[in-house]
View 1 (cartoon, one colour):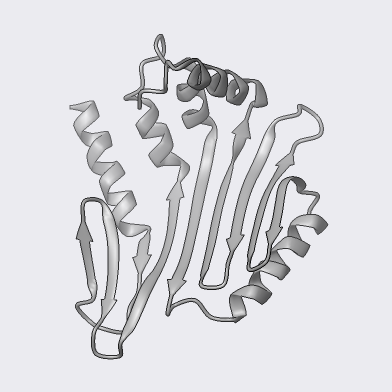
View 2 (cartoon, one colour; view 1 turned 45 degrees about the vertical axis):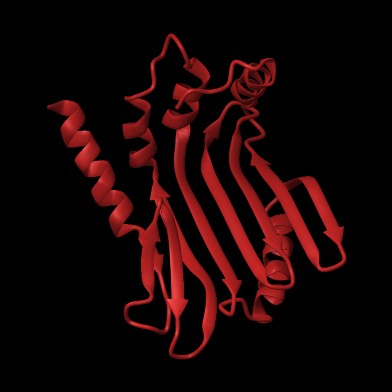
Length: 181
C-alpha cells in the first residue's frame, strides 16, 4: 500500500510539473515516452519543453532502489533536491537564446560555479559547471547548458551530492556492472 501511494504521488508530481507548448491546440502527442510537438497550421516544427522535478520525486524513487545492490544510486537519489530541464528546438528556438546562454554563463561565473567542461566549436557551445559547498566539499548544483544554431538545452540539478559517491558510481559503470535503476 505504501508503494502504491508513493507511486501515485510520483505520477501526480510529474504530470503537474511538465509543460510543453505549441501553437496548435492538438499538437502534443506522446510516443514511447517521447514528447512530440507538431504544428501543421503554421508549418512550425520543433520542441519546446520545460520540466521541473522536485526532490520528493527522487526520494520516492529511492524507495525502489535496493540499498545492498546500488548504495551510491540510492544515496544520490535521496540527496537530490530538484532538477530543471529546458529544451527549445527547431522553430521554437529563437536568436534570443544566444543572449540567454551568455547571461547564464555570466551568472554562473558570478555565483562561483566552477567550469568542468567548456566546448566552443563553431555553432555549438557546451558548458558543464558545478557549484560546491566550501565547508564540506559537497556539490550543491550541477548545470549543463548547450546552445547550437537551432537548439538550446539547460539541465540544472540541485542537491547535496558527495563527489565520492559519483566517483564510485562511474567506476562501477566502467567495470561493466552497469547501474540497474
